[in-house]
Length: 244
View 1 (cartoon, rainbow, N blue to C red):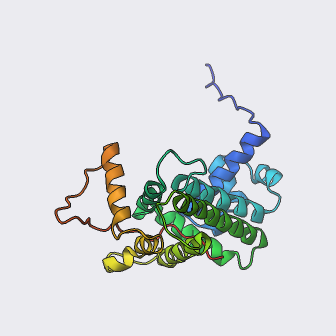
View 2: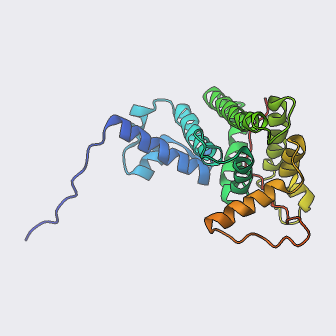
């Protein structure tokens, strides 16, 4: 009687194993919270002993910080790519607000709330939160400056304008854990309205550009616009980042 063949275990390189651990921790952070990241929990997720996790992360606090940075960094690269496509600054900003809309980013919004709270007591996480906030400010400020330089935006101080936009986004993001269905449209659209006002754009510009981009990709038809205006897009409590 032959025995069942055993699955051959593949020995991963240290870099691949470390990345696997961080990715697993980032997934748990998004779905369960940073407090749920423990050596035992990650070991169970990956089917390995906790001792292997501690070999790469002797202090679980370092893994928590790394997991947050990985999740937040991935979000930043999705919303504001470091190497943007050949789109105009207005289209890039419209894309940013379109992608930061709706429930798809609720988990990452909650993660930012979670991280900022825990960072009061965890120095490694506090440093990582500050680093991610600086990346967010720098990435959006660069976009604003591009728009000013090419004449699409008007802003006397792009840094201050960036902070104004992000403060509003942060304020909306603080309510990611509460019901948003009954909020007035003027509130849900506040971040877009702030950006349009502070950058000298006509009201509705970013919404119309977002709809046009969707239509060009075939994602959705452009909304009817009989009177020259468009229905304002809701900007959810998603994007989050970034008091100076």
